[in-house]
Image (cartoon, helix red, strand yellow):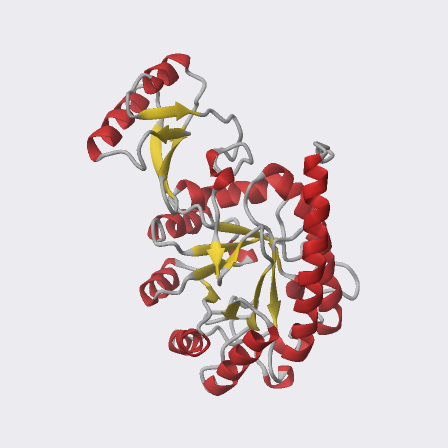
Length: 358
């Protein structure tokens, strides 16, 4: 990790640094933050002569080497101080709540707009709405690009940012061109490295936030973090990690709730953790319990499916969306719990008690 003296390298400085790195089989990736750009070294950082030559450049403040499979996502990286502001909330200081319908029905746009206003009233910070939907069966509803306008209409009417999932490069480009401020990578694409790299490259410098869900078939925690590394290494550091249930399944739940990995993630990486209780448990009656459990484990945010009339919804809404009234109670309780947990965490850090190793 190369930290420049100024906010960023000039083109000539960038070329000189890249030339030095190429001699040692390494390359340079700029990571543009809100106020400054840092530069990741891609390749083996252990060559002492390379580091010495870089540190000898007058426009280089310092070089931090991190021998980790996820150099940028590592809690010891320079991005530890990176802040994300979403919907008026600073991630890790305030609890972020993303809420809305699983799927936007282009035949009934008014219902989605009603839901958007209702979840805002309930206290949500971001409106979620599925434009394109990954489905196991090719015969079920796959979504429609026509719903982009409905999603943006909800943003205009409520004044809140919106979130939607993209599954391929065409959808990614449509969403970026439309100005969607938060993109979601679903469980089916969490290991689609070519798509993750493309997302990072296309959204570089745009301030776009990326909600990366955990694949159902991910193994070690490091595999999840490495997936996020692809996005950050391609230029976008605005990544949130989203546990959403995994396998093996648990009788009665849609998946095996995995909010308990939150402290393990926060021990290893600086990235905010935003948990999806809706897909974890898959039934509306369990969602409030799962949401509060996630906050108790230290989650920085929640993404919850909510619908003004779940029975009339499409996609997953009929079985796992909670009503805005229930959502309001969950948000109030979650925010109160979040403050209590945060005080405990601050006390824990102040006493310099390290988290137990995994």
